Length: 479
Ligand SMILES: Cc1ncc(COP(=O)(O)O)c(C=O)c1O
Ligand SMILES: N[C@@H](CCCC[NH3+])C(=O)O
Image 1 (cartoon, rainbow, N blue to C red):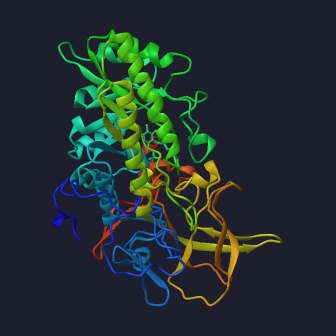
Image 2: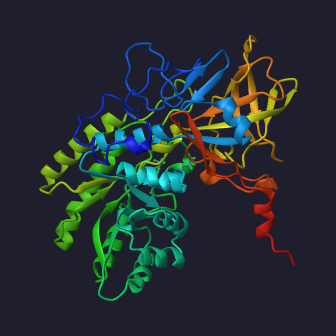
């Protein structure tokens, strides 16, 4: 389906919540690709029915190839080279729609840090989502692409003067206060006669998230203001004393890659408690509650994923019950999914450059690495690459897929299963590559960042070109 023929944004908002979790509704009759596995959305399916971690459009082509968005991956590798990131536009759009259907009456902000480019800005806007940004860079890219600034929320634990200036100049809808030192700094920058809507990011004291480095709901980390030690309450009082700041609500983001609903419900309870105390002390009722993102997806067959339908139903029930008990009106809800929208829509293609068999391991080295995907090195996460473009009768063997960088820790997929005859020249495809790969890419070893290619309806188009040596050299102005 081309995006030109899509219904207008919000068109499907009145439909009943889907039976699926983060999965898009069924669109094609394509069979899941061979060797595939649970859907990253973790949607409930009957019994032992196989589920896929690939985009819903993924379909086998002949004996050995796989098409995504109707385009064979071997064709993409030949045309655009490797490494290359492939983004299934329909998958992104359907994930946006699944959110809007599951969370009616909610502001759904796509978290741009997961992955942003101009096309992504268009897709998210056309589907009717807002945008969560955390720098002047993300903000400028979005607004200069035409995204309405009033539907943007700005985050950051250490917003620079340029971030704040840009936010005020462009007129962002909301700024999330993350520290007390930011309050006066922001207030003086707001032009006389106007008011900036703000939320205060609070730390509810809840441990959740896929790895210690990405848990942000507890007191022992850098984000937000603690409810337990009173910093949140103190910041709220300071904000309320600033006439140029309009406090519209509370924000919390528990962490990332959360696969159960329970921590979100605990957060709702604690935030309602704080809303009640704010009304008691300050006589005001805050109208908004932003629960952040963090919705987990499966990266490998059998891994758990957050059930979006259950999240939607249970959050609404908790909010309604808790507010009724506290005598508060139900605030307008906001959420900020990043990974669950972009992650499963992406596939990365690598070419095998060498295969080394040591005593204990087989190392399959490819032409990318930790410079385009630092996640395994950062969090020890695992991926499930597969061979495409060559039929192999060899039995699968455990291998370690490594990158090309000068680090022994440059691992892309530990304990992966690939055919025993894997060899240089083979093409590997890794699913669930759309979030936090390229957005965290580095310039290590000056290899240049890979391109991003959109696929839809059997067509491929370049969204972001490969970073060339000329790009790299241009920045280095010499002596
Ligand atoms: C404030 C905030 N909102 C939303 C997100 C998006 O998180 P995720 O991509 O896990 O949904 C993040 C990143 O963890 C974040 O820091
Ligand atoms: N970058 C992390 C998650 C942190 C998200 C940003 N707060 C990941 O790759 O999983």
